[in-house]
Image (cartoon, rainbow, N blue to C red; front, side, top):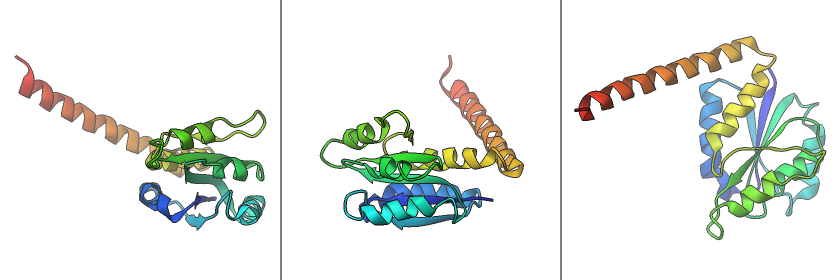
Length: 164
């Protein structure tokens, strides 16, 4: 199975990235975590992206806040799928990161999840790998069935408690 790379622009992004890692662990998907900056270490980010396919990666997740150019910088240097994970900063509540991540020019796509959407970044990456991994696809399907059952139970409990 291919690996997933989780790349942060700064260690301050780690609280959001930890949610990503928890989901990847729950699905027993191999991953590595790096700190590479589009602005402070652009050559290292470029080198990583260029070599990612050869290193066995299938998807890159790029978590960054503020100007958040990391996902675009990685996508410009690989043909692997890149998922942008905008991280909330104190200045603009993450809108700056969201806009920087989602507004990619034509020809260099970046899939983008919600601000601080670490769990969904992981799930999207897993879904991409599951295109060719039927066992992983089955586990994703089972998780969705379980989530639906959980909501049905909560619905029943709320209806009983509050309906007149």
